[in-house]
Amino acid sequence: MPYITVFGQGTFEVAMGKKLVLALEDNGVNILHRCGGKAKCTTCRVEVLAGDYQEITSNEKNAFAAKGLNDQLIDDYLRLSCQIIVNGDITVRPIMTVENSSLAAGPRPSEEI
Image (cartoon, rainbow, N blue to C red; front, side):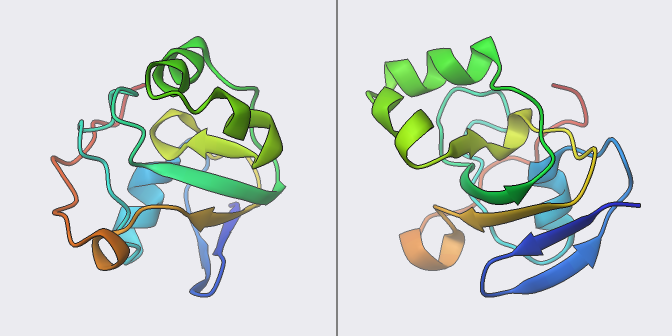
């Protein structure tokens, strides 16, 4: 089973094929997902520091473009955790959390992309 390391918070093991946003939430990381994991709001974005992850999806590209964040896709290695399926070890830094935004997390994302 793969390991997820969250910068400043620790490492945990998750089931292969789990959505990253759900793996984070299920392991005590209060990441935002204001749109419920539909790749619309970009609040679940993470900076990928290391590891295995698939290429950026068209849903992510469209969401980043709508928010004017295209330059951060390459420069800051940002991804939407609702669009990443865990298929190997990965190290991430959540960008927006309940703690640093004072917002509610949002509706729990579905298991499907």
